[in-house]
Length: 99
Image (tube, rainbow, N blue to C red):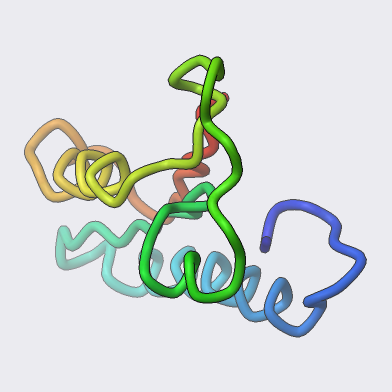
Protein backbone atom coordinates (compact mmCIF):
# COMPACT_ATOMS: atom_id res chain seq x y z
CA UNK A 1 0.00 0.00 0.00
CA UNK A 2 2.88 2.38 0.63
CA UNK A 3 4.39 1.84 -2.82
CA UNK A 4 1.32 1.92 -5.03
CA UNK A 5 -1.26 4.65 -5.59
CA UNK A 6 -4.59 3.80 -3.99
CA UNK A 7 -8.15 5.03 -4.42
CA UNK A 8 -9.18 4.12 -0.89
CA UNK A 9 -7.21 3.50 2.26
CA UNK A 10 -5.13 6.63 1.78
CA UNK A 11 -4.29 6.97 5.48
CA UNK A 12 -3.19 3.32 5.63
CA UNK A 13 -0.99 3.82 2.54
CA UNK A 14 0.54 6.97 4.02
CA UNK A 15 1.35 5.11 7.24
CA UNK A 16 3.05 2.36 5.23
CA UNK A 17 5.12 4.97 3.38
CA UNK A 18 6.08 6.48 6.73
CA UNK A 19 7.38 3.10 7.92
CA UNK A 20 9.61 2.86 4.84
CA UNK A 21 11.00 6.35 5.43
CA UNK A 22 11.48 5.65 9.15
CA UNK A 23 13.46 2.56 8.14
CA UNK A 24 15.82 4.66 6.01
CA UNK A 25 16.28 7.25 8.77
CA UNK A 26 16.88 4.67 11.49
CA UNK A 27 19.34 2.81 9.28
CA UNK A 28 21.31 6.03 8.82
CA UNK A 29 21.35 6.70 12.57
CA UNK A 30 22.51 3.17 13.39
CA UNK A 31 25.04 2.84 10.55
CA UNK A 32 28.02 3.87 12.79
CA UNK A 33 27.17 0.96 15.09
CA UNK A 34 27.03 -1.61 12.24
CA UNK A 35 23.32 -2.21 12.84
CA UNK A 36 21.26 -3.01 9.76
CA UNK A 37 17.66 -1.82 9.58
CA UNK A 38 15.37 -3.01 6.78
CA UNK A 39 11.67 -3.64 6.33
CA UNK A 40 9.42 -5.58 4.01
CA UNK A 41 6.38 -4.43 2.06
CA UNK A 42 4.49 -7.71 1.76
CA UNK A 43 2.07 -8.70 -0.95
CA UNK A 44 -1.48 -9.50 0.12
CA UNK A 45 -0.88 -12.43 2.46
CA UNK A 46 -3.35 -15.05 3.62
CA UNK A 47 -3.48 -14.18 7.32
CA UNK A 48 -6.34 -14.07 9.80
CA UNK A 49 -6.71 -10.34 9.31
CA UNK A 50 -6.68 -10.65 5.52
CA UNK A 51 -9.34 -13.38 5.62
CA UNK A 52 -11.46 -11.41 8.12
CA UNK A 53 -11.86 -8.56 5.64
CA UNK A 54 -12.27 -10.42 2.35
CA UNK A 55 -12.71 -13.82 0.79
CA UNK A 56 -9.64 -15.55 -0.54
CA UNK A 57 -9.75 -15.25 -4.33
CA UNK A 58 -9.94 -18.46 -6.33
CA UNK A 59 -6.36 -19.68 -6.75
CA UNK A 60 -7.25 -22.48 -9.19
CA UNK A 61 -5.14 -22.37 -12.34
CA UNK A 62 -2.93 -19.50 -11.15
CA UNK A 63 0.84 -19.79 -11.24
CA UNK A 64 2.65 -19.66 -7.89
CA UNK A 65 3.62 -16.04 -8.54
CA UNK A 66 -0.03 -15.07 -9.15
CA UNK A 67 -1.38 -16.58 -5.94
CA UNK A 68 -2.02 -14.76 -2.67
CA UNK A 69 1.14 -15.07 -0.57
CA UNK A 70 1.34 -17.32 2.46
CA UNK A 71 2.89 -16.21 5.78
CA UNK A 72 5.74 -18.66 5.13
CA UNK A 73 6.62 -16.72 1.96
CA UNK A 74 7.17 -13.55 3.97
CA UNK A 75 8.98 -15.46 6.72
CA UNK A 76 11.61 -16.61 4.22
CA UNK A 77 12.34 -12.99 3.30
CA UNK A 78 12.62 -12.00 6.97
CA UNK A 79 15.01 -14.91 7.56
CA UNK A 80 17.15 -13.68 4.67
CA UNK A 81 17.24 -10.17 6.15
CA UNK A 82 18.20 -11.55 9.57
CA UNK A 83 20.98 -13.71 8.13
CA UNK A 84 24.55 -13.02 7.09
CA UNK A 85 23.56 -12.75 3.40
CA UNK A 86 22.03 -9.34 4.13
CA UNK A 87 24.98 -7.90 6.05
CA UNK A 88 25.55 -5.19 3.42
CA UNK A 89 21.86 -4.28 3.11
CA UNK A 90 20.46 -1.46 5.23
CA UNK A 91 17.81 1.22 4.91
CA UNK A 92 15.91 -0.80 2.33
CA UNK A 93 12.29 -1.74 1.93
CA UNK A 94 12.01 -5.11 0.23
CA UNK A 95 8.84 -5.07 -1.87
CA UNK A 96 7.61 -8.67 -1.81
CA UNK A 97 5.03 -8.78 -4.58
CA UNK A 98 6.23 -11.78 -6.61
CA UNK A 99 7.46 -9.59 -9.38
